[in-house]
Length: 363
Image (tube, rainbow, N blue to C red; front, side, top):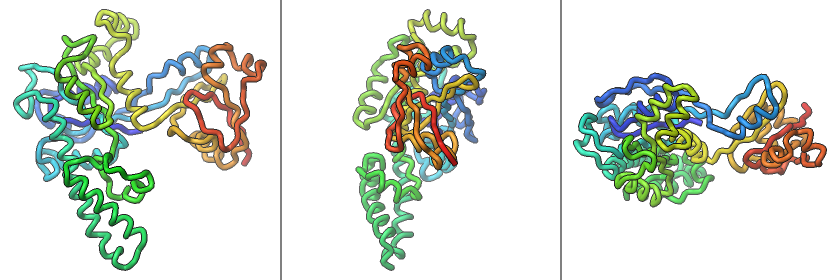
């Protein structure tokens, strides 16, 4: 899973990235501090995995992971190559979802590329540039498909029809994700590399003074925009999150308590990114290893087995499944078996979030 961190220059993208990944990416008070994208992997915070580790006492524990990409700041005109627009747009195309960092704090010592802090305007600038870039891409695809469509190529005809729908929709200033295309339609236009079709999570970067409620007039503006778009909005204070990242576990816990927070805002941001892409976890547990595996919601048991190894999917026989809630209630895998709560599931079983699974296969 790869999430691209985007936004205008100087909104806190790199500071947030550093806090998330502890990667030490450069962060400074001038536009385009980030040129080439920084990439960092981070574990998905998962209390269930911690509990299962205590229960099984394995030699190692492996969490699910998320990859964050810190992309150069975007400016008005990026779709026409302003600033580092072309680089920015190409890097976004390589991600599965967008974390749009929006500045929701005033600070005279931190410059704003537009001269004033206005979340609504900032969001509009980013969205407009993504839409304009997609519109240019769709227009090129429309022309490319014309010859094939005239020759009677059925797939090209359908693709050109979809290109026309997208061209009209994008021309109204609306993102591709709201064009009403089906999953099958989106698969047909995957070579269009539409940026505005990607799901969006707004990270509202607030001031320390807004903690712990993290709510002000600017965040309310972003929340309203997110609601209209069907997007997710999470408040964080990048500066505080960066400070927390420098502390040890006990110091961080005490610091959070002093701020009136139960957990770092980044934990919610990472989990929200996981949910944004329609992902869930299942677990494999034993003496050697307790591990969280990432799958799409709706995956059937053989598909989940294939995430471990292609042979598991190819030679799938059955899945021995336990419910997380039930194993916590019973206290052990042995107790689950004795209670008859380990289920044998076949090829049509749809995986549930939190399943603990032993796959049986033969190749």
